[in-house]
Image (tube, rainbow, N blue to C red):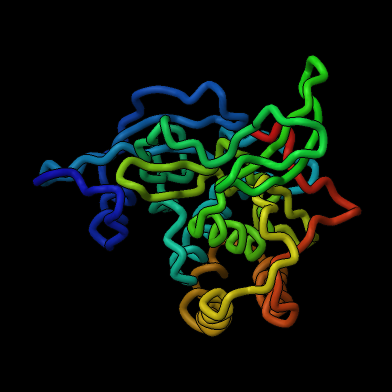
Length: 273
């Protein structure tokens, strides 16, 4: 049996991630929390590469409860699937060699397909055609530069998903172009805070009106939150966090627009990549 492919979000892949033998093969040394490259092997020969983040390897944070980041990653996957975004790789909670943690399918990245980038530009200039300017500034030697992201339907959907999740850490390196043309977002441990903390490099659509299809996604998500999705999230988040998620969805529907950066909270994560 061949290994499940990246686009397979079915129960077979999720069951393999939950129940397969988890074998650690290496470590992602650039990650701030313990992040391990691994694989899960099934009894029938199926195997899939994955990321394993044990709760024991999470660094304490001043603004998020200790030991909750893995569950938040799983909750982000559940919301992405519930809203029909399919922008988060299949993610589960499970036990492993270093204890309970998050296990997520490893995605093979197309290194030639940058989604977020920094361009040299004249002062006041915008990004090249096909890109959306996020901010203008100067680099370490004083040259004028522009931080921008692709003007992509998939990134627009990810920007809306981040607003729903209250994602406090959407760095450029967390936006992946996967071989085959798929776009996914990773590293959702800093989501679902009860206070507004949206920090993202995907501000290109700030203030723009939501499209009818985007409003439909939000309405679908609101209905699911009253049913099966709410039951799932109750096992992963606090009651207050689930209630705030519901309020954010209602707020987006009421406003009918993408949010704008907050003046009381840094709007772009540091570093941006």
